[in-house]
Image (cartoon, rainbow, N blue to C red):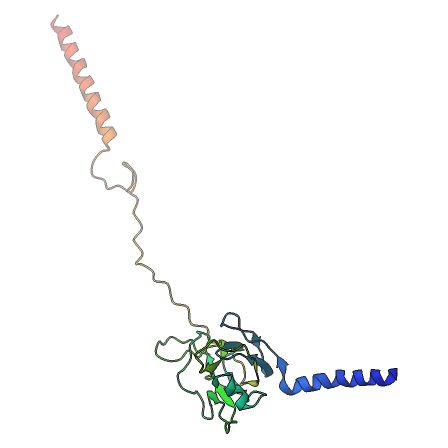
Length: 242
């Protein structure tokens, strides 16, 4: 009896991962870009409320591309309609958190409806990530960085949306070979016209000064000597007269 119980527990333990693997890994989407979990390529499942926004991040390098396929919820469309949800919308936002207004690839279907005869999956793709720096202002940003899958359920009711979780599954595929980004060339620093070095003026009496006459000090000494000679001659003349 005990062996049978252990066998049953073991069978349930092995079966649980198998069932979970069919839907992929569980993940909890963030309510904003800043709280979005960073995911890799793979299969995931989560739940979303009526009128709720969810975000998931994927880091892409140059040469890569993100493609997400989201299947219909695990519950039937009529049950989703009864919650007041008329559709689910998906977009890929680039690292600047902006999004192109049109699908970027043939086959994309950015809105998933819950009509009774609707069963096509939601498919959204990112642009091909490029390595060249984006210096333009008119086209979509396509450089490397974190790209975001944004999901939103369209609630048609007038009252507060019900707190009912709608389960869904999505597969994220990252294709292409990662390439290094192109480093922009350094902008040369502007330099002014060099000023000529100041020329030192030679000291008076130095060899570099032009020979324009006797030095000032020498002329002063000569003048004083001439005065003394004149005084002495005057004294001598007076002595002779006596």
